[in-house]
Image: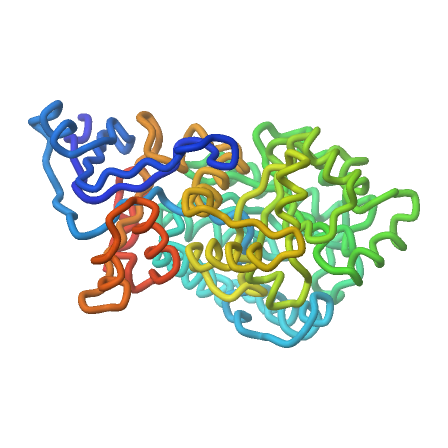
Length: 433
């Protein structure tokens, strides 16, 4: 039997088109109605009109709060939940001293299971409904992430992290083992419910040419896979990759040679791109995951947003937990705004652009733009309900705002997990406080 239609009544904010390319992209319905049926968006507009057109629908009154599309995090590390806050180091030192020791603990399946539970709860409690996730270096631990995502109902794209050099020896694999374990995980989880698989070499610094060939083979043999890795994050890392791949004219060329680019490939960071790399990123349709909090915390540099825009390179947002400072995508968006204000090639990001980067841009990066990221009819009903705690600074700030951009600005700058009251994926509640 079909689900009975439900109207969520509240203030609605979403961005159904790219505001970097289209003026007036923000949609705001102060007294809005979001009609959900069979887990999909059936209508979105002013409440009186939606209600009149669907008089038999039940109404859930959420006035006083805001309905936004579920947030999409396009770069986050599942094993690094406990590493957040390890400040004062640059990338390679931070990996060796902070991240990799914790990632080694994922060899303990029970520990990995507890971490997966903490990780998925952190995503949902901050309003993230879809995430592109670096799994663990261990197949059993990566399976625990998929199992927990399936249990909670989140939309997770993840994969076994594969490396065979320059890390701790117990995190290394071989091309043969990586192929075998990845193939088994793909068969078990890819396309199951809301789960998808992403081929995940950690980065070129830790991945031999033979391992990159494995990545290429996995993508050729399995339809619909995504690809994720890191690129151009830190000067020391970039120099090391140049030494390891002397035939490559730049970092991106390493991935290009093995066909690891294209519309469903997401490369994290790209803080220090060469002009030729930007041109080829745009031409191949490869996405970049911009992680402003992580880039600042590790001293990696300032993401050259204007250069990406001029070159036509598409990008979205990622929290990069645990080098990043938390799971709050709204904080990530605001940090991007702040950094770009003082960048060498400075720009002022509009509220609509920030909302786009944390919702629809991420969905597009993952090949899911037709499925989630906005409230257009036919899409999955992935919804975050935000409501300021009574008497909070955010609540007082909202009293003085009378426009959609103004209210959105207040939410992005001041709302945190305390304001995330309910989260739905395909209309089903996956988190509630």
